[in-house]
Amino acid sequence: MTKSNLRDYPIIEKIEKTTESVAAFLTIFAAVIIFLGVILRNIFKTSPSWISELPTYAFTWAVFLALMSAFSSGPQLGLDAIVRMFSARWQRVTYYFSAFVMLAISGILIWLGSVLTFQQFLTNAVSNTALRFPLWIVSLALPIGFLLMAIHAILRIMSNPPEVDAS
Image 1 (cartoon, rainbow, N blue to C red):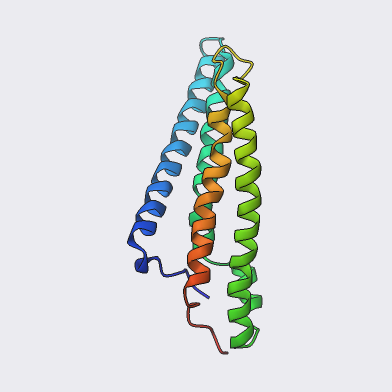
Image 2: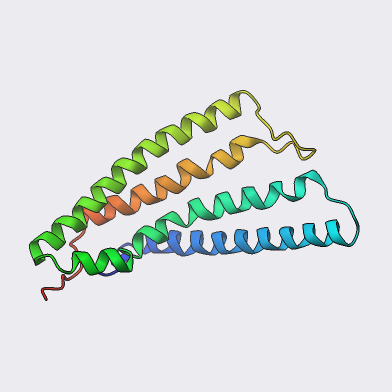
């Protein structure tokens, strides 16, 4: 099986490309901050408490924003090799089954992530460093990431599966 055809949904394709770009930027940002922390610690003998906090938040957002792309890129190589051993009918069944499972998991994590984010927002929860970063901003990555994944799962359910390998 191959990547779902997002060309049928230009807005979804644009969202996916944007989230990939933002995730890449956040990963580079985190790497730069980590490098800065190493320089500050080893050369200037100082290490602000927030220097390890920012990369963690950037990586968290990068991972959850990249979920949609990871799901849309199709199965992992090992799983794909196993699925290709199935008949064409069972390949289609696994295509839709994986989409329904991902939709169910996404729904649960959207709900739990939203509850966590809302609780942190209401209680004004902040990090315990000098940065005092609002934790709801970090937690918001969970429901947003899984909302994007749920949208893609719904589109997969509504679409025809890619051509199956009948070999």
